[in-house]
Length: 200
Image (cartoon, rainbow, N blue to C red; front, side, top):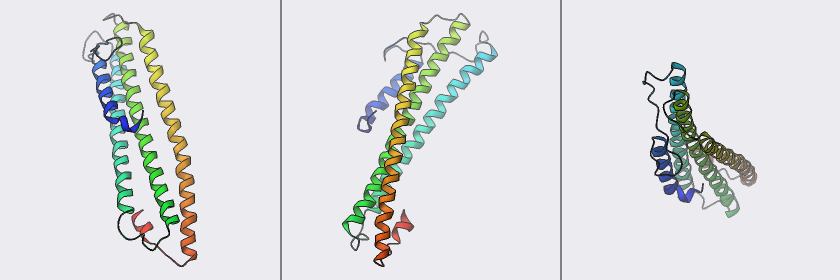
């Protein structure tokens, strides 16, 4: 999922949530939510459903946190690169520092994408749990194969998102090493830009 398509992703996310609630507008098989207070449902199944519902809530909280971290990373770069504190610093050092900040922003973007993939997976798993519980208690019949296929696809999406995060962590590490190399060059020139430590 690309960052520039964030509004589209949010629409799709809401569409998927509606699908979990039993509306077929988003495509695929409609699955009716299970009422955990239904006396027909066994205690074990109620716990199974409740755990899946909690997983969706937790995943959504994780997305909100990742989104906040992304905004903070962008604000940090804007704050640190502003002003005249860089006037006495060479372009090489400035560019190295900015590259590191941009790498961290990209990492935050990818972490938010991964968090969104976790929401998608949690919602698909909840849909699967609803369907399995309905079948187990003879409430309603569903074709489980397509439902499980969507879960597998969401799991694959999350795996790919996590892989991109891992790759970007390496980029951040390389950028950080390059920045500190540049900073040591400043120290050798008896320049001490303490702003890097007070603000970074």
